[in-house]
Image (tube, rainbow, N blue to C red; front, top):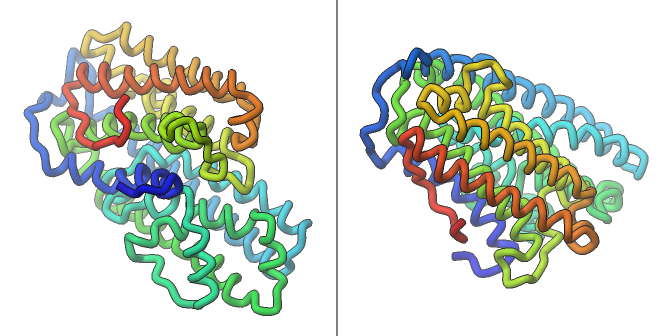
Amino acid sequence: MISTKKGLGALVIVTAIGLVIACSKKSGSGDTQPTVNGFDKGAMLSNYANNLIIPAYTGLQQQIDALETGVNDFLNSPSATTQQALLPVFKTAYLQFEKVSVDQFGPAERVLFNNFLNTFPTDNAVIDGNINRGTYDLSINSAINQQGFPALDYLLFSANAVSKATATNSANYKKYVRDVVARMKTLTASVLNSWKTTYRAEFTGNTKSDAGSPIAFMINQFAFEMDQMKGPRIGWPYGKQSGGTQYPQNTEGYEAGISVALAVENLTNLKAMFNSGGSGKGMSDYLIALNKQQLSTDVLKQFDVAINSLKAIPDPLSSALFNNKTQVDAAYREIQILLTLIKTDVASATGVRITYQDTDGD
């Protein structure tokens, strides 16, 4: 285990690497019926692929394109004014990423998409060293905390970002920023293309719920995202898993001051994925078909409670950890309740085994 508190944040995000790998290596019987009490699981998976997952990746591709334009505007004419103009563009793209964060399976798992785009906190010292040397390889797994949205957060919005962009030796800095954006574009295009060309059929054609199936992937990822909310996004910076010592600088979107907004978007999208936007073809409806109406209702209600508790925390979260402890405590409690409902009750009801490993228990 990594011993530094900064490393802890990266470590839990990195556990996503093993999430689907673990699913694929373990076997289980699962439910092999394509329909349950008249509920068509194939139609549910098609709805997820066509109406939620592929559109979300398409939206991310579009937002990263817009981000690239905004980044180039800043780099070509760096100033506090162009930096402020870039902030909402960056925020919109980062919020869009939260809509695909739960989809870390299939094509995304194969390229470690979430890990490369959103491992936080970054290793700022290594990033600075990369820039100073002018040599680095962002494709290797050990570079996950040197790129993606967290790296751009540091590179573009830290206190000395404008001075780095205007320094006489700024060429390496600008190249690094552009290389980070280019890699984000490449990875997003790769995942989206795989969904459109090959993986969609694989995803929609397997209606089992045993380990390695799309349903198992999704429920594992629902639980994993909740563990991230309880840990790296809220609990660890707040000191819940660090002996009471707080690490506000380790929050997601720290420099831009958008940690709460990202958390709210993440949880709001998890709810939308759970009930498939109210389409009647989501996991919540699958639970009802399994005669778990009350569980479905309880989970949806708890989503709303947890989302509203997060909304009560003012951004930036790094300040709220000290100044709004009542609200942070309340949100943390509601997140724990929701995590247990998904990780224990929903998994049990659907016959899915939770196969990833968290690091702090529940």
